Length: 287
Image (tube, rainbow, N blue to C red; front, side, top):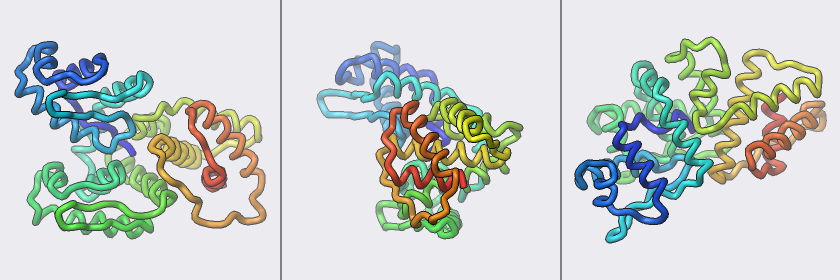
């Protein structure tokens, strides 16, 4: 999911750069010496960075007593990570335009679960005032055939099949687009929303199957298809389970072969392993 990590200041970026360049663990004192600040400041920033990185599709930030901190992130993932954290425009627009219940939906879709205390900080409201927004988010998830589970002391978590979670992502995207986007081109909006996926491979693969099978997506169809393919790629990177919810009809048409060709190209470009369930999913998005 999706909007990406919140905006970081230059010091936090410098800390992450030091962690990325360090092989193994590094202490707060060593980081402080490298970037020119106090050890206390480093510890405070590390607590914030660790919270931000929980649930994202990239690496892991670990802290161990007497050893320090370690960032586990491959070079390719680091490049994507830097690209994502550099995108500030959507974050600013999101703060201006999205309704509070939409922010809760976004957080839950992005992280799977979220503590009420985090929502209080995110929305700048008390527990008493955040609950009505959780109620609205729960109603929205029910409409998407998903359940928002509340557990006292641990917050809220999302429960439901991966297929409906992907479609819920699309539904949220459409709400976001209506509320905050003034961009005229679908590719630009998609690129900002899915800032953790290099979308050019999807766009090129779409152009290839359009030429191969002599058809053209409508404007809305192109946007929806590209979005749902990006959702699949993110799930694959997270190793999330996916099962197509319905049996295929006998008359599946040309879309089945077109979808298989498309999926093979996507698997090659993004280095993901796609099962027969994903073939059904791509057929569904094409139909």
